[in-house]
Length: 298
Ligand SMILES: Nc1ncnc2c1ncn2[C@@H]1O[C@H](COP(=O)(O)OP(=O)(O)OP(=O)(O)O)[C@@H](O)[C@H]1O
Ligand SMILES: [Mg+2]
Figure 1 (cartoon, rainbow, N blue to C red):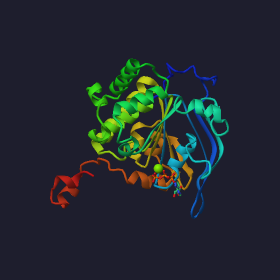
Figure 2 (figure 1 turned 135 degrees about the vertical axis):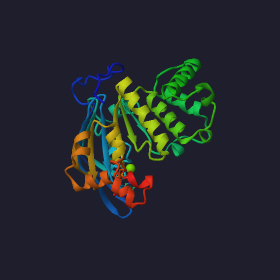
Figure 3 (figure 1 turned 135 degrees about the horizontal axis):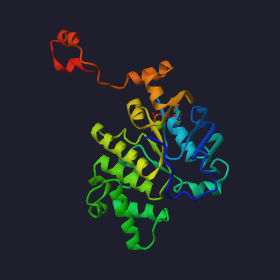
Figure 4 (figure 1 turned 180 degrees about the vertical axis):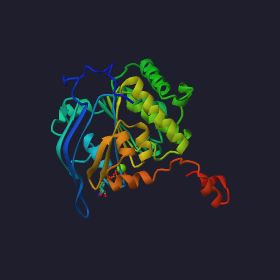
């Protein structure tokens, strides 16, 4: 995936086109918990260029979600102390409250981890998507809002969109719901999508479809992605660059290929070892295991 120039919706700020879309510098987050203060993020710096996919990967508790939530400024002020700088499309979201409201839901949108709980169970898909369209200011008037909602579902390859809009969340599969959430994120034509484990609640085959969709959106619309995963297989598939996170810091950063094929850190190698790969067929091993086909590949 190569960074592509952004073609539409690129006139919203005065930030120079050459500057990174997202520039995070020395981000630190302290969470105030019942058991004391936890330094969840301890000085991370990274950038995301327009049209690029940057992935944060690391074990559970390493601080990936906290980093993403701090970037979106979704951490509650009374429970999190955030320092450093987060500049999104030329706007410092940590210090400038008014500017933050302008970029959130416009420049940047979030795709949450668990599609089953992210939507309201008592409202139809249509009413929730139409609300997202209205909030984004992407259309006004009943017919235009409905047309835009249909178009958004078509963009995420949900067949028979008008009928699906009448359904309620429990009537759709997890993969379809995640597509709906991606459609909601797209309502505002964001330049950056932050996706926190967008496929981890889904079956493997459904995961692949959702990842394909994210990659397609990126290729066709030039959307940048800040992706969070604990799965290096996913990271390898979709990223331009990877940051490997552990205990609140980046332990290794680089081009996706370099990190995957030539990891410098033992921790990264351990993450890699957790990814199943197809090895070469080994005759002797196959014989030893009684010639069973399942033993030969792994
Ligand atoms: N609500 C909370 N209360 C207390 N501690 C928290 C809370 N949320 C996160 N933490 C702590 O902050 C640190 C980072 O957590 P974070 O959720 O960012 O990790 P993560 O990398 O996203 O993990 P996962 O892969 O499990 O989602 C951990 O030490 C965690 O225990
Ligand atoms: Mg997380």
